[in-house]
Image (cartoon, rainbow, N blue to C red; front, top):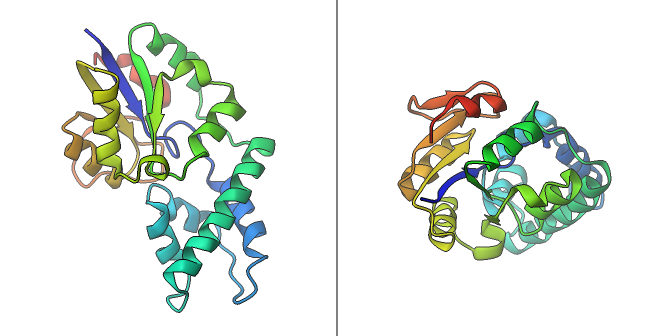
Length: 208
């Protein structure tokens, strides 16, 4: 029986909010038609949303959809370069816990991010060997819920859970028909009470 744990990325495996904020503010200095800088609270509100929605949340309504796409691509392209060099902190006991979980479960990542972001995380942390597969809307054009279902089907999982930190993660997990565990140390919370972990290594207490 093949059992899997599917993880969100931001707010679940690492906290890139400060590093991404710095990188986007550097990139936004190149945008000449308006003066915009964001703070960490903005970024924590953005994270977990599809990139198009972040553009709508962050940029003036006067900016066309085409220009929004260009600006968001500029920010994320620079973000990838920045994170590959400087990285971001992973949550406490991440690596040791993943190693223990991997003895019993197959591990995956599904994030609401652009193509290349999960690869940046895996490259900077050198955790390629921990995860069997990963997916994001930047590669598939699908919603998070659809990508969760895709990972389950593509990897022939008999059972799986999803671990995430936001209400969007919870709703996507419900769409995919899986149990949800809330990473309560992350950026948000689901609108309904669920199983939760207060530290990453609390996952070791669950029988999945």
